[in-house]
Image (tube, rainbow over all chains, first blue to last red; front, side):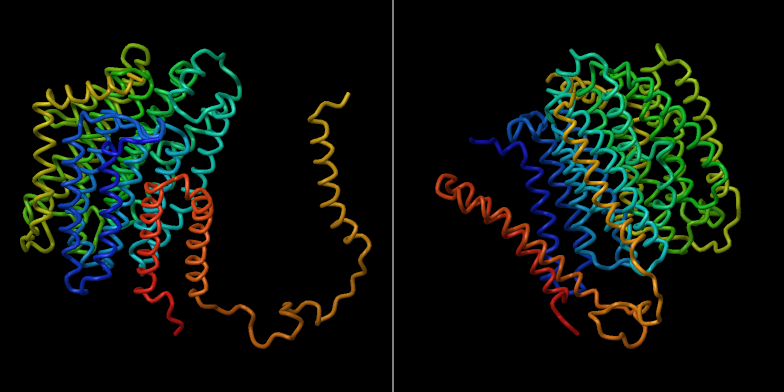
Length: 476
Length: 118
């Protein structure tokens, strides 16, 4: 059987890049290792260009096990963009605190590859493979600060979480397989569409939601997130918050909206309740936090809740809203975390009170944090407002209470985001020397801020592209 | 009436009895005479010297890990070797790539000193 390999060139390029970075780490002398960061980021930009250029080059590989459509292409763009920004933002941090550049960048590339596989996977086994590739890479990255007990604790917790969630997820998948008799998502969808709702199906659905709920850190499966986010190296925290979350949403959409479209009534209400609880608890618990990384972890939980809102109706509008929000979410999260990790580099502190007077020391870092946080809070004219608008519009008709919860809690979130802003702009700095921001970090900060503003003012073209991509998702 | 699954049930019951029964019989029948000799750690029959909670080298772990890599490699090589004639050049190239990736891993382990025993 002859296969068309041209559609998976980006994936092949990712494997080659990961292996190549590792080999370069072996060959190059120790003092030129920091250049690997530049090499990795520019290669990733090349691969991103490949994906964009092959936007309409869709097809399947391995007899439908691996599916390349505009939906998966769009998610690949999300993951690659996140990876590029994270690599740019982490160069200073890695050189100063971590070492082992070859391993760091190589594993980062492999985890991105795992996400790409997840976005394209069209059957349960491939999905699981991608998920494990991503998760195992993340386990290594989370405990990359090898001499730091907090990082090791975070790694340990992540291992346990990964084990439990994989077990639950696999059990759920096996139950669905037991009902449908196939692992191909599209075929599962066709079989379930004509079948009565079985108790066994319900158990399977609950297991799947629980397994993936761990990955996206939805309440009540969120307990691991604050500890892991706090302990992990800061650039990895941002990648975990965006990449891991959006990849899990990609398979969540694939399994539920495509595979269980016919029984969407039985899981729609489940998703709605989960989203509501996640939004409420994430936002309320974020308020008393004093560590900025923990604050961002709880805000990330709340964001997962917002994104879950798009799942509830199992509609094209919902899928589109998730994709749009996911895209702007990268820039917001990476913007904040790049500033956090650069600030940690200088001061060695993640406490919010130590951010006093940041606006005087580095106006750029403070401004980026403000814009990113307001985007996450959903304040116009920033991009988050448009994203939230699309998300909540989908549920206004049938689940009005969920939209109201989302709106009220968005207002609550403004409070704790602005608390940080207040510290940065009102309080006097203890050390008022200006901060010099290095080139890659400055690029990342300016770029993320620009995107958040531009997409907020002018979301039209992106919205159009995503509309088409979401439509292609339903074409199978 | 016993259905097909009845056999499974009987199998399960007998299995549980077999496992639990053995331990239970030992618990009831065995004489219990404690002595200092019996409560020391068992290490191939010879009395242990010094504390038994010692650290041992993590190199063992690395060896085990590398062994598993090549174990898995063999699993994939066997079916490929048997079907080699009919698979043709494409499968050969695929296998070479697979082996190359493993060799890079071995190279990495070597360079990082996984085979040094000091």
